Length: 182
Figure 1 (cartoon, rainbow, N blue to C red):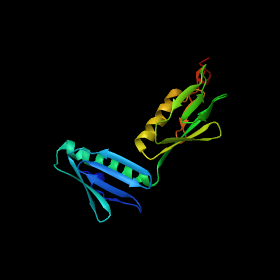
Figure 2: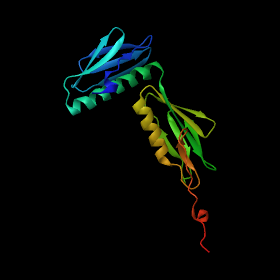
Figure 3: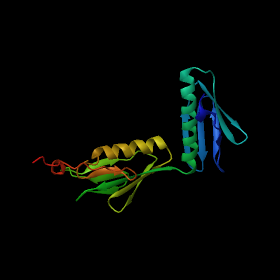
Figure 4: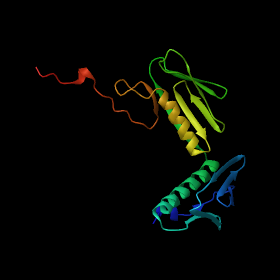
């Protein structure tokens, strides 16, 4: 039995939901998200709450039940508040700047790395070493943040590179850190 799937999703003030067969459209002001859900789940709007039910108790349907409910809750949260991932750039000479919908990163390569931001995703720079990736789709925000981080992941020896703000780096001691056996 899916514990997550059984929880109803309450709709905040101003959020509208339209269910058309397996497609669900969630709107608030100008923010609109659409997603098709598996046919194993049924989504109903009851008394200002969204309820996700499954058609059978097979293992696949139980897994899709919790997934569908979580995706739907993320859609409601996204159009209402939005999502944000924060990246930090560490290293001497490492920096970021923005030109239109492009993010330009100087992270130790011989060239500037250019990242084109997809529609619906916004990057806000705080100084030149902190990037706030914002958007209404949690999946897209996480994906673009992971792509930016993958350009130069933080080095485990010096800590240089791009990391998530909440990520904790455990620096390795390197060769000099070993105890000598003399």
